[in-house]
Length: 305
Image (cartoon, rainbow, N blue to C red; front, side):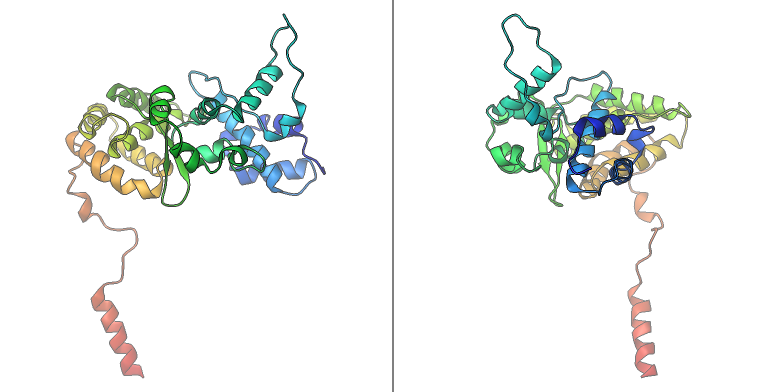
């Protein structure tokens, strides 16, 4: 396949079973094998776009999202004739044109990115000839946008991590949102053999991380109280352990220390599940060599010499 047929790849990707459980690399490998082509950057970007589409369609309730691939821009349809109904293709083309001229259209696209994901990857921002060419780097675009519009109108915060990646967070949330997300996550844990949606856990982490960073208008105290109230009513003592394990898979490593220190440990302590000072006494998975053993080893080496 010399040229990527976007719609053919889309049909193939969306027909795969257990799509959300597969890695991006595995799907690209399958697509390359199916279409007898190489695992190129173009193929990877195309597959990534349709994975994003699949995630959006799985959200509850479903959300309108303008998802398309830059290669589709060559199929822009003629202008709508008077009285003619607007088709999906026409709507898609209209939005594509707005992306190069209207900052609000770009913010609207960024806002479709689910929380705790990288909006730069989600929107294919740096794809050749796409948004970066018109608006510059994502960081520059966000800094030049109105904070009032970004936060209040689109409920959007784009955080740049120490790794250089980005993280989409909500600019405003409530303690009720924490309780709702926790209950949805808890309900999923009680359903065996069903595909679990990542949305509840991402929503919970979004609220907790934003509170720990003091950027989502929910105080740390309120976040702790809301989470502790749900944990206190948990009958299965292993459920909170599973919650911690799930959070470790979603929250970036650079934010885990802050989240645990400010919210998670105090919430577990307030719920009566574990004293916040007890964690320091846990046995480490990897023991660092002690200074005494190191000096003993050095002495032994010197004696041998």
